Length: 188
Image 1 (cartoon, rainbow, N blue to C red):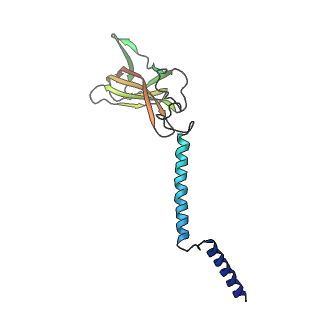
Image 2: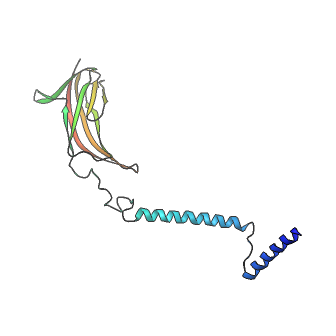
């Protein structure tokens, strides 16, 4: 009798569904419904993300929304100057002195307002000229660096200070604030 009662309830539900024009969901159509719902949710989430990015005050690319943050490198408010080595006049030319294998300190000072977050100075020291077979080894940093020479003679170094601004998106911009050629006479 219990089986008959269960069947009777099932038959009644089936008759009610037919009366209202509702079809019973098949086993195949239910996964399709979930697939469609998942795709619809992804499309709506993407549209919402785009709307939030481009909304006023949202996070839009700088070209589309220039009021977000101006580049701190576009104005010439920062400059740099060479602090060391102190160069002495030697025969009408400014020349620093050093010894082979002895570190020559190089220091630069940045002038201007404090740097904003994400902006930092980079110092590069390159050999412009020197004796044949002589090489230069530099350990750079801000504000102090050091240079070592492998052979005696006259060297010319190019000292460059560049401000680099990193964004949170992985990009970078740069502006050179000092380029200076320094002559160094290296003793044995």
